[in-house]
Length: 192
Image 1 (cartoon, rainbow, N blue to C red):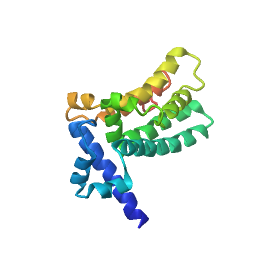
Image 2: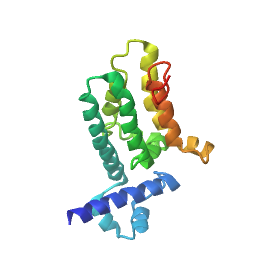
Image 3: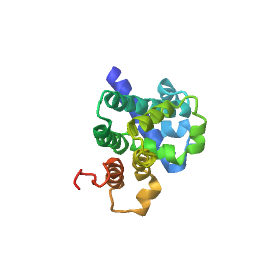
Image 4: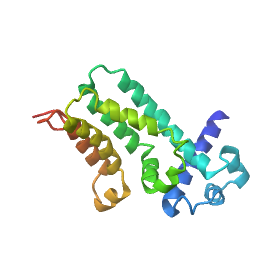
């Protein structure tokens, strides 16, 4: 039974994100989400009482996945060698199940301001910025390392995707991010 509840929860999250993307967060109602799911509003309430609860659950799920990446990164001893793998792991999150959530976050900044106190990603992003630039003393290298994280997000931006049809934006973003964290004079593959 627990598996069915989890499946239903994930389905609600997926459908809600689709509707938020199609018509905007503010214009989407719980009734519309329930209709698209072909369930009663009461059945939807069993899992989520508000749209805010749906968004909070999505942010919590992403935070848990980021925690796995952060736990791995904290355990590494060689920060220079860790950067590229950290970028790859984060790219997998952005490209995978959390891509639609990342796009929602980029397109709904005003909505997310209301989640400042409930957004579990804020301190995790600060820690990622610290880890990615660890051991760098040159301010230029620190900024390049931090820009690598931003590249992953910008590559997932709907505008970037619209402007580059036929291109895999996540692949481009990963390549740029890897170049930014590569030692100077080396490409993303590590070759000179």
